[in-house]
Length: 296
Image (cartoon, rainbow, N blue to C red):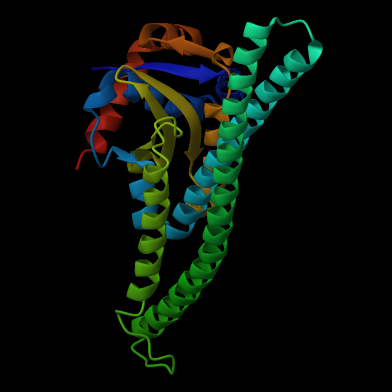
């Protein structure tokens, strides 16, 4: 099944500007977006990969930061829920104190008020507990990232000496990265367990990546439904992709929080007609080539 693709005003303006400033690179991005249209849900690894599993395998430090940001979003929702209950409780307080209710209505309102007070107390307590867990996660995250960075630096020194056929005094072995990776995996499991415990159905949409190695291009998107994807962020030709992910993921999360009226939905014909009039066949052919070149 092929996708429809939704784009925010900001992404649409970015693509239009890119085409005006560097049409060749803009065409490449257009071909990559067309890959989503033509391939859709049939696209498999290594062309398309879930973002979290990709980060865990290749960029553990970014994976930890991403998990932490998801927890902050959950905490924000918990606080908002408690605040909404507090607002509803205050409304009932005004009704009770207004003197406009008859005895039957007053009794019913007081009962609802007591129920709201209990729910508010529970929501506030839950938010406070979640805050403590998120704070603890952040502290562990920073310690584990520091340990991973140190182990990685030691490994790189070891590999540099080994390439020269020399020994050095650090005593690095092939297994020295294993404890650092294990610590990352364990903390990511903690994050996943927390989301399961909270029964989060409304967690941010599962981010995925369209990876076009032959074009040195990454395209982040979220599958909103079986037939609709949201184009979020595009990266091209970066020397340091780990740094790019650290910048791109917050942008992707911000895009997902926009209102629906800030997005435009396209099928392939509408997209090509707006951005590549007269070049539709060439862009589709380019998308087909990208698919073939990036197959396993």
